[in-house]
Length: 88
Length: 403
Image (cartoon, rainbow over all chains, first blue to last red):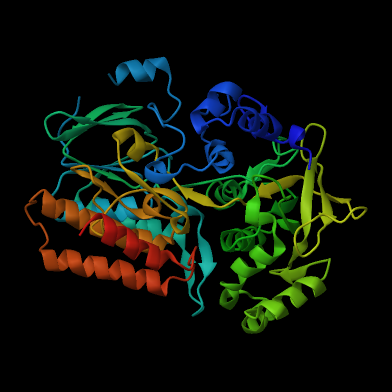
């Protein structure tokens, strides 16, 4: 299967191969993989690719096994600056 | 800043609607928010026949729950997204929404589940959608998704939605497995898929699956069945269910024109030279559901990873309370199950909150216990069990975390 032609993060157009390569080369955590490849950092805030990225990540062990691999931050929906400003 | 509500419920699906109704009934001032323009959540898409022959019409069920919540006095707002949730110092919560900010002592997260995908080359072409999107377009928006479709991925949920597409007169050319890769895992393995489908064999309108299921519990016979499985697939609801075929790539220049498929071995490996294109103008990817927990995460809830429940779920007790004061969860955010279970959980949450808030007509502990029993009963009788070990996982979760 051609991993170069499988896009995982649609917003940032990051392929399965790029993510796997980053993990293989750097043995990185979920967060580091995200920062290196930009997967999950697009306009949708990772709403489509988050579960996919989590499937690829090295499983956490011990005390951290139940933590969410990728941190979730507000706003959890895309909002305009006008809306955000009004709500403060 | 609005601070007039005792309880704000996020999500007006089966769980949220039931909770808003029972909490308002007990005398709480309740606000129910949903980001969709219609109330009912995933109920809106549901239309299936139950074993007794009766139809489960989700739209009708949603109407009844909405009526119940409104009559009990809950305020309801649609088209509002909650974007943030924070515990504020003096025992209350602040909710940020696309229409202002709210303060409230109690919050119930009934945000449901979201679909995950199984990516393959071409899945970003126009005309590719999740199977749930096809369901919403068909049953809610009443838009024809296309003329001839291919479904990639097999699960009991996908089957139910395919039958709905058929009812709407939409032609499905084939159902095939996703390609084997680092993302699809067991979803691309014919044996694992057959295994999971067999659990729902009593629902299968197809005689072979229905009556053959018992024999196929035997692994030798199951291997034999997979080896003999016809390449053209077995027709279920008039759709060829092709367990021995996988999608390789979705093809098309500016939009979906077809799906390149290949025959696969019983272990899921593509057989060289068997590739061909199935023409289609839309593709549905059925990749399963996971609990939508974003707000629980930003609120600071501890999580537990429970594969049987669909992934990471906020730690909570049988009374639907999380480990954070005043924060409750109900429905698919606590694990992927049927709408009936979500309704029963919503009732528990509504009652527990009313009890905890010492509401005017607050229920007694016995009433809450009854409601909790009802959840277990409903789960036991559920038509669609998304995972065979749900009951056991639930018991474990509740026992360990909250005594």
